[in-house]
Amino acid sequence: MAENLTISTGNKVEIYHTLIPQIKNIIKDETDLIANLANITAAIHETFKHLWVGFYIVKESHNNSNTNKESLVLAPFQGPLACTRIHKGKGVCGIAWETGNIQIVPNVDLFPGHIACSSRSRSEIVVPIKNTANQVWAVLDIDSEHINTFDEIDALYLQQICELINKE
Ligand code: SME
Image 1 (cartoon, rainbow, N blue to C red):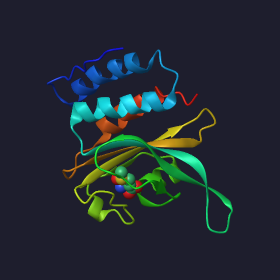
Image 2: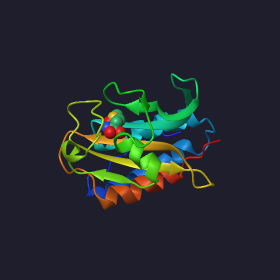
Image 3: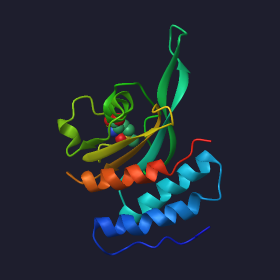
Image 4: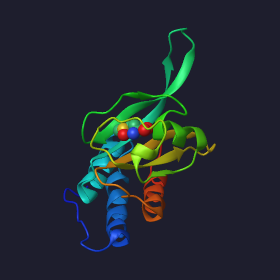
């Protein structure tokens, strides 16, 4: 496994073109999901120096009436402490889970229901990760300290990174 990460000094497309083959190489011989998610967060975080890069995984949980309910539960991440559980339809992550669509948020203050895990977060992108039955089983969430950080280029390449992840 590569121990050093090469980071392109070029534009965003070139940076992703350098990053993605390295992620492929890092996860190709490892079958453990958490180990791979951990290294993917580290690779993206080290490359872009974003405020927060992490995964939330859909897991069963129990609410007060003791009914089984699913929520997004915090998984490997890099950055400041984060909220541990997010319900379906809540916040940017919960909406990405509910709709199955990538959410690009140029300004979190203008996103109704945004969950502010860090007051330093100004913009955000969330990519839903789907299984073969097209169900969302996790999301990749990235927060930036700057307004308007993420665009369709990030959506395209982060989606490609998420497609590399095998659940089992
Ligand atoms: N802002 C997210 C919550 C997760 S933290 O940013 C790490 C949201 O609104 O879903």
